[in-house]
Image 1 (cartoon, rainbow, N blue to C red):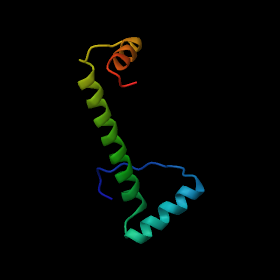
Image 2: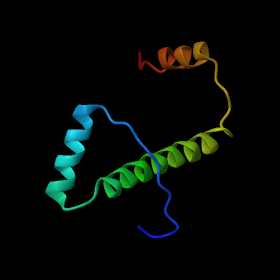
Image 3: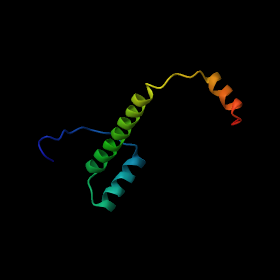
Image 4: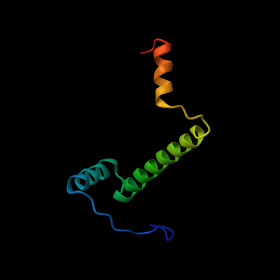
Length: 77
């Protein structure tokens, strides 16, 4: 652990903890490495979702009824 890393306590469900320990052993990685990777992936997914929301924020609002009527008119429903 380098000096820039922070330490914290995390409580896992016993089943998750066992699975995490097994994965760490099988992949020859530490529990910290696996947890850090999972958190990074989760935050990256959140960032992608936020970017998608930002892109769609400029789209016009369409009332649900209008969408349904258009789908009926076009024969899609």
